Length: 103
View 1 (tube, rainbow, N blue to C red):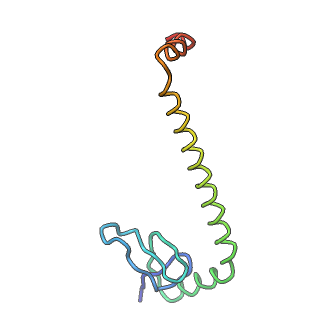
View 2 (tube, helix red, strand yellow; view 1 turned 90 degrees about the horizontal axis):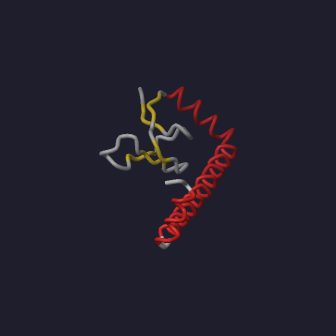
View 3 (cartoon, rainbow, N blue to C red; view 1 turned 120 degrees about the vertical axis):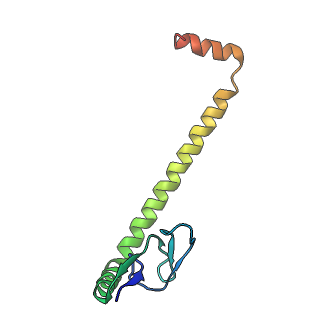
């Protein structure tokens, strides 16, 4: 019999977060958020064994990705600040920049 399970840890202790969005599930055991999968007892046992064996590695990788995303967001915010500063140019400064660009 197929069950809806967490693809990360194999738990069936998952909830559908937003019914309008079928791919948003949350695992109550490992805090995974995303699409769930359907599997039989053999697949569930295989996923659970892999999770127990590699749990620390998976969590470290996730932390690294989250840190990279945060630093990327900081770069985007810095770029937006630069754009805002450019918006504050006087008309003379803007004309000078346009001449430099031959526009």
